[in-house]
Length: 89
Image (cartoon, rainbow, N blue to C red):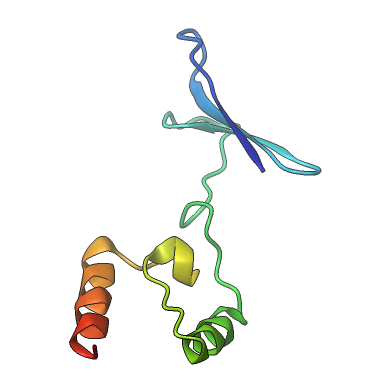
């Protein structure tokens, strides 16, 4: 995936995302040709929790919505998870 930040002041788009077979343009302005992507670019996957459990076996701990693949995790929840992990040391 490649992200291009667009600096053209006449364009309503601020970022272009290129994947192997698709191109997306991102904007903060609503419009008829704009479709919102819920939860940003992180989408839940049924195997992510299994991967996290397997990593713990090797003392590898993941924190944050991107590392854990949990799109609805908020910063204060990440901080709480870190504090709980720290308490187990």
